[in-house]
Image 1: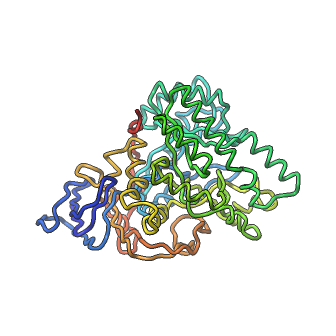
Image 2: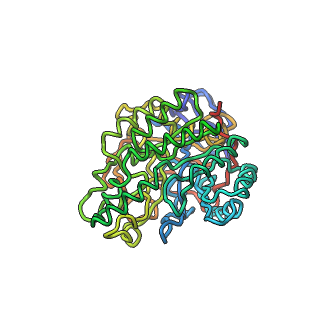
Image 3: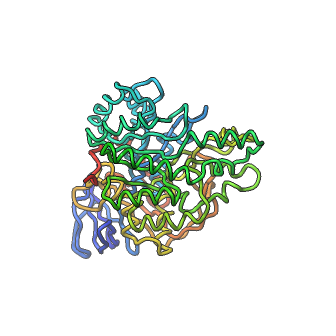
Length: 461
């Protein structure tokens, strides 16, 4: 089936111009001068609207085990919510349990996702057990289209990797061209602060933030950068939240080192004050790294403008307030870490355009084009251009909406952005040429989403 999107403003990372977009089957067939006669099976009028490449959320956790429970969104519900928010591709994390193989872990995540996704999906691999065998298996994962590997400097006894283990994995990444992704917080020191707070009778959610100070994110980020420098490995810092960590990334990038970083909407819009909400309300905002004091937000926006922060992902890892977050009543260390957000990333980042923090082109770049290039999907994805997958969003920049759990489509009983009034709203979404969102209704189907095998990071020098 062919579709012509007429009268819209096409926005790519490289610029904006008026053009009609012709979709033929699963791909973009042509960009056409407005007014030029083109025949199509269906015509969508995008007058007054933007036409942008579908969003790519490069950091999600669907059905992720954590602390005796698992994140509330399945691959079906999470990717459906993503579609509602203009995201047409996610990259989720396959979590290697200690003592298991990477390939069996990859098979397990395929069994969760294959046939259950509403939009396209890929995987990163979490390495929690560095052995000779798992290092060898990294090569097999790359051959299977998974070429980014996440490690943790936090969570001792669960995901934590020693500096020596990190160094060995980075050496393999240098050898293969893979990218090491790092959760950079000093988990050994944090565990001591957590134990001291609990011993002093301090169990409220705000302690989650106070026992994970920004200095320990900055220290771990600096250490990861030095290990990457020694090994020559590419490094991608996930969910960067603190100005101290950003300073370390900026300094490394200024020397030409292959260091990249993402931040998340929660660090741009929420703060330690939310963790300190009365009663147990702060538990809704427990994620790691934690929300920071508000003064960090201006540094993060500046990092997005200067490209020292290259991507905005969500770290979507939702746990319901009732029954899940409440596991930590009286003991903040038992609150499942994670927040919902996959549905609202495109809208929340558009507020940066509305407020003059970033340009329209930079908005598209950080929500779609850069993650496509960073994780080896460009130019199949991340651009409105002939030959690309027809992942296309018609976006109304003047529509207004109020974010609420009453209207969102994520399988979680609260919204971290409850009551936020935003300007801009997704109007129509195409996933590989199929209309999945239109006229305020969902037209997609479970199983439409396809696994995306990914090439290497296209920014490496």
